[in-house]
Image 1: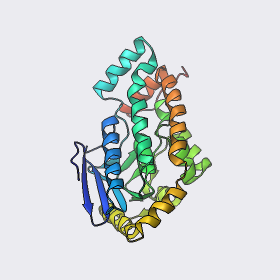
Image 2: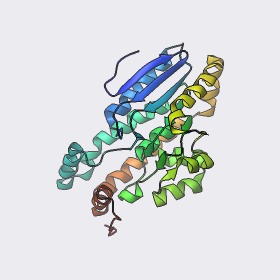
Image 3: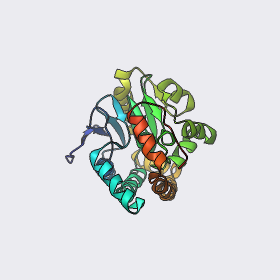
Length: 268
């Protein structure tokens, strides 16, 4: 297995494991998504690996993008003086890397032991299955930020939990508990928090007992066209994010979230 800066990668029998190592919140950026996509490409080339587990260190699975990161804030300041889309070039590249995850050929089980927020929810939903616990929280919190959903969630979330349930998550930005996620079908298994990764490994190992050729063939049928639909969705999502990122409401949404208060949106 190759070594990576922000993820740990191992092979356990016929299961490949990827562990995000940016605790405690495991914020994502282009580099992290690229590393995950590279590791999945490596798994696809390894005929011994038949399934994979995506997990994370720390209290969160992935808390999404860090809008309060100084480098990101500098990009925002530059964008405010010129074309707002200037700061979104990296996000465009991030979505290109995200689509690579959807093009992976082998089943992925996400071990969601904590918060999966925003793009972190998108990452969790990119997997075939999710194992979680009561303490976990799932949130598409984009509208609370004055923003538009990304990471292909406008395609993947409705397909997983139904259009109306996805609309409810999008329009309210509410946090869904692990129990609620399980009832919605957003999670496939609900276990105690300290059993999330072992349970994910058990499920991946069960998958890996099956014929590798049969798995590849069946998964290709079941996910046919998904990566292309996600790519089309991210193109639209990016355009909307570019437009909304330049608004006063977006700046207020980010600030209010940081200050843990209700945002005072103006609609401009």
